Length: 591
Image (cartoon, rainbow, N blue to C red; front, side, top):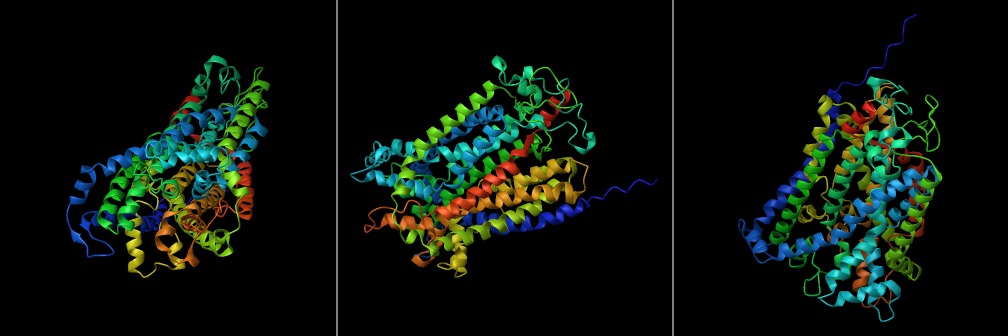
């Protein structure tokens, strides 16, 4: 009997074609605005007077009088506490949840999801602004320290740390949990090895429970199981991403202090905004943007090199991978079984539950000014239907475009592997803009919008980035991991399993777009075009508002819909993700 012909995968050359939209989008919305920003930084002038070429004079003044260094140092100081949370607190919580078993881990994912979908930088900052009132409630009274130049920097650092604790910890835990499943990927999960259980989860050759995360051995067992290399690489990426995002902090500073008092709390993004738009001097503003962009570009390149050099990949574990407490059928063992660093037992469950309760308690305390502010928020135009339409239609539309373009390129680069084993090095083309948001390119993009006559139009509210580079990185790694399976064709083995992740990332980008303050603040001056964050900002700037509408950017309906979607994604898809490296595979194979 003739055996069926195996399905033919698309030609690797097709991968180049799929990457074309992302390359074009990068050229149009990232490369050209970057070049334009550098050119503007060499000029003086702007909106009010004609621009003239001055060479590097803007940089000399900026670096010579200490403005940039002062703002850079303060901006970095704001990152210190979130960085500690992301690289110390988050991995410990991830390990505790992973070791606790199925339902504590999933309960943790649900709680963490709530911290993500309710986060609004302007809303949190507006809640802390209530602390400046004479009858300031509870913890919010800490904001009183923002009035004094001597105490304002330290106070703002504490407020940023408290306001971002939940979301920073949640996002970092979401990154570390798949790394803890590195050992859960059977060593035949790649097509070359088949689905050999003997080299996978068997107690004899795989991950003996006595060498897991138990007792004094700590991570030693995980290293043998392949978890430690993946955790290390993810930790480096999380740390770099935390610093990169922190360098672009804008909303907290603008809402709470506007860089004062006496410029003691000025951030890099605030310095750029003041120079380019308050003082109408594009040259100095573009100089700040260029210097910030150089730092972000270096961080993006370093992160991409780490990913490519470690051969990081993301894949989906089979639904039949044993959960804690379930010994593999192929090779039962007398001791507890560890699957990717995961084990069962009353002690592990108790530790996980306690860790989750402690996290929830700390997160509740840190978020209490926001919770209290939402409960006391009056209805206002900031939460009107029109502002919600202005907020969410452009946010979702921009996310669909930027993530959709990134997904096509990820299928080409990660799924079809046009350069073979080293295809992920193609990500270096996009790496300089991995962490670049709307801020560093804001001056150039605003000028482009003005030249096209789109300022104060609904179309201008759409984010100017045509490709999401972070989504491209994640989706490429996922397509790469899925492509290593040969049990299905490209459509069934790569496209369909990766499609839910594209949807999840589109939702994440939509949330980020909706909570952005800078871009809609630049392009919409008419109240009819205000997004919810901009309307909140306008309300805070008005002396007629007795109390800010803290919950305007996170209305109950939006939070409920987003929470249902995120929880479903967590339980049905994200909980099956596994992050592996070349080192983790090698260690697991040798075990």
